[in-house]
Amino acid sequence: MGLLRKLYKILIPFYALFLLYLMFFGFGRNQYDINIVRLIPMFSTAGFIKQTILWKTIIINIFGNILMFVPFGFLGIIFPRLNNFWTLILDFLSAIILIESLQYFTRLGVFDIDDVILNTVGAVIGFWIYRIWTSKTLTRK
Image (cartoon, rainbow, N blue to C red):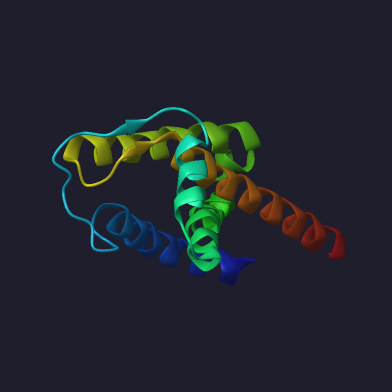
């Protein structure tokens, strides 16, 4: 666990910066002319699925929004208070809502509740993977 903790501690800040880059500048983003907010849960995702022809694009977009945030479920490795599920989720939600708000205010993205939901699902999955992995590691000792 010590090596994993050190490696995670080194890599997660770079990973977070990489995600921030993608969220604000990646995928050929340009600044929108207006501020856009989408607050109806799963409405934009359903619209995206209806308008997209390729299943590959749908899978990359939806599962990407989930899988890219799985590593944040492991934050308890370096921040012990985040070993509590609700603390992790509330902190994660605060951070992701702040980022979505910054996308809205800078117009370098859209405040989309679907992103908040899908990203949080990723953190939850990561948390439960981390929990299962650490409980198995502790029972082996």
